[in-house]
Amino acid sequence: MASDSLHVTDQAALEELKAFLRIPSISTLPEHADQVRLAANFVRDRLTAAGMQNVELIEAPGRHPLVYADWLHAPGKPTILFYGHYDVQPVDPLDEWLSPPFEPTVRGENIYARGATDDKGQTYIQIKAVERLMQSNQGKLPVNVRFLIEGEEESGGEHIEAFVASGDKRLQADAAIICDTEMFAPELPTLCVGLRGIIYGEIHVETAATDLHSGVYGGAAPNAIQAAAEVIAALKDRDGRIAVAGIYDRVTKPSDKEVAAWARLPFDENEYREKEVKVSALTGEPGLDVFERTWARPTFEVHGIRGGFVGEGAKTVIPARAVIKVSMRLVPDQRPEEIAALLSEAVRKAAPRGARAEFKLLHSAPPSLVDPDSPFLTKAAEVMTEVFGRETVYIRSGGSIPIVGTFNQHLGIPSVMMGFGLPDDNLHAPNEKFYLPNFFRGIDAVACYLTRLGS
Ligand code: BES
Ligand code: ZN
Image (cartoon, rainbow, N blue to C red; front, side):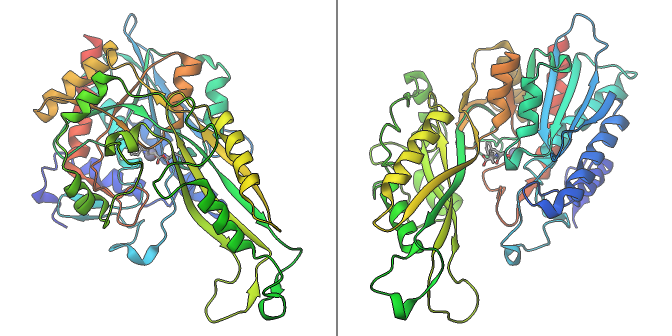
């Protein structure tokens, strides 16, 4: 615990963040619903303590609450909508964590815990920035602000999607600020101006009414897991090209200007492979560089296969059913509904003789691009450059933040994605961490940004 060796300017903020991180708010697991609610309450209470008004939980049946708050006493000034999420990803494989995922632990200059960077640490940056401005300015802010913090980002986000689409007056704003992305490299201030979309679902494969003895029927009966493997293998070729008819039809090339900017980013492919991804070989479509493959091309990924016998020991069975969790990342101008329909058709066709295969969509979000020339972006870049002392770079990210597209579509506002995560923060993986100096510089950057927007 070397927290005094850090440039910790605000021990209290760190302790509050730890309290937030101790709450196991895993939104996708129904047995964690009470914990998810505790995290919502935590956010509500911290927003109240920060001096925000009209703080409330917005409920919908069977959904995790949204936390809303506002402060609207800066007439004539812009209104900024803060977005973040208080839910986190599951923690398995648990035995790979060096300290338990919900016992936040400072090692060196990092704090380790599930949600440390994605997105509790970064959501807390926003709350502390507003609180600090309030405290240093007699309870006033330089701009009008609203908060909308959700608890289902990691598991589909239906509640916030419906709320934003409902046209609720509380969401009137000029721009959104989202702290839920990464910097391109340590010390390199970064704005994210593009995200991939996603369709996520399950492929259900069925070959028989019930499991069968593999000795008695092997050689005659189809096997659902074998069929599942054949379906997966049919959907992507060995070069990494997705073998779904029509899938690339709407894919647009990044502009020459954007590609040129990416080429100026400090990047060494070997180092990326060895130190960041830690794999023996990179894969993906030949002839396209890593930026294009991860930011501007669609993907097809398998996340898990359920079926057959997976316990200790041996059981000789031909499984009758298998379920494959899959997703595709989408890029401009692909449309989630169209892509889901194309995938469904391809899955049906890929089923081998004696097997039925069906794709069931769980959730989806469109890809999004933000105009880098919007004054909200250029001012953010100036502030990031000041705080980090280096020129701000603009990148895209291969991840998805569904609300960005929703804000654009229903509120007509740009999302300023000022992210403070680092490439080695282990998002969604064991030993997720947040680099604490970025927590404090994040607070500085957001506070400076609001001040800049108000002047
Ligand atoms: N914060 C991430 C997205 C992200 C990660 C953006 C890194 C930029 C850089 C976000 O919380 C996330 O993981 N979203 C999910 C969304 C999905 C479940 C709909 C994702 O991308 O898998
Ligand atoms: Zn996130």
